[in-house]
Length: 460
Ligand SMILES: Cc1cc2nc3c(=O)[nH]c(=O)nc-3n(C[C@H](O)[C@H](O)[C@H](O)COP(=O)(O)OP(=O)(O)OC[C@H]3O[C@@H](n4cnc5c(N)ncnc54)[C@H](O)[C@@H]3O)c2cc1C
Image 1: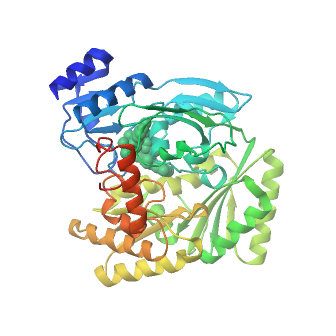
Image 2: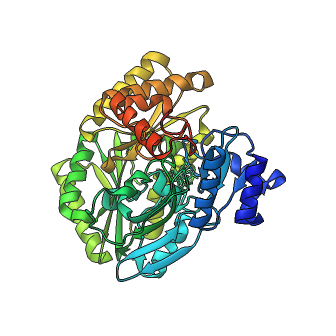
Image 3: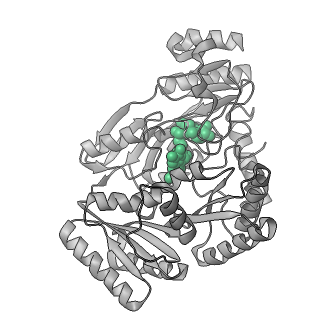
């Protein structure tokens, strides 16, 4: 390792290579519960050529590498394992261009998501990828995990927002496909190799991102319903009434809603009764007053038809914030639970009610006293579950029960957060043996020495 460190210091300069006490605790963990050993070296390239130089040297020395972005990942993929070199994108944080005619923004991979959003906003556009970790996560990490977040229903996941990409392979080869065009059928769409593959096939170094015109208005409603079937009807109804401007559709079952209202003292329900299920829906538009009126009329019609029981439309930004604080209260759950298992699964919407009944039944049969909270981006089939018994020794079984059911219902064990290291044992519930074998073949073809993020996503 010492010889490699000296070679990299010489080629990249001392600012790019941290060793000894300069390797702080920051590089040991992400937002998952996984903590790694202190790496001997952290390499911080400041351009694609330096990433390529680093990988060429690592390939020559047979040195395994873990890639780090903003370290907000929830699956442990960026956490170093013993003997790995950390390659951090933290110095590659420049926005290179906003092309207002093409509506694109070009940025280095280590640029924080919020910086991308702010640059788009300052140029009069919207970059719609948005998640709670926006201040810390990097656009390269978002692309590598195919991040979802709050606006998938209208704009899609990170994959839909990338037009061009540059990546460095395990042997240092630079693949530059920095296209600005939306339609591009000239052969294989190679950028897809690096989107959502969690750094196992290449290191994302730069990207061309899609921008959108900024909506001029936003209407928010908190809606109460008697059943999940009614919320599906509401989703389809609002979709047809407002077309593509239905931006957000978050469902919260009473288990989640009541828990948050009870435990998070900054939240309150606008309703004087309790209901089985709630929806937080948002419509983007062009005129606040006119859109608000249309939204109120549409919800009144839904109430008249019986698939909405009650509805409150936010009359101010403060009220909108108050509705969202119930959904964002998820961040507080950990403070009121012990040893919870947290899930971000996808299940076909047609089978979601049946899936939840099955999970409830299995948890009750196994533990009797398990608590489970259900909520999620239901418009995207994405269900979050938080389950606990209070005993640490039960956590493993909680994961097994939910992932087993997810597979049986044709779902995905990770809708957003990726596989990393934590979900590898459960990937078999979502992927067939043939799919896993193809993933291993792709990995072997692009990284034959197994140097890039080894032991993440698929075991090789
Ligand atoms: C409060 C909070 C809210 C969140 N909300 C959401 C949400 O709504 N939706 C969602 O999808 N996720 C969410 N996440 C998870 C996380 O923020 C995302 O997965 C994010 O995209 C990770 O970006 P990062 O830069 O922090 O990546 P890291 O954590 O640094 O890395 C994640 C993975 O990507 C790899 N990687 C990072 N950068 C690169 C690169 N340039 N090239 C190749 N591989 C790379 C790493 O090796 C690792 O495997 C949330 C996390 C937190 C803490």
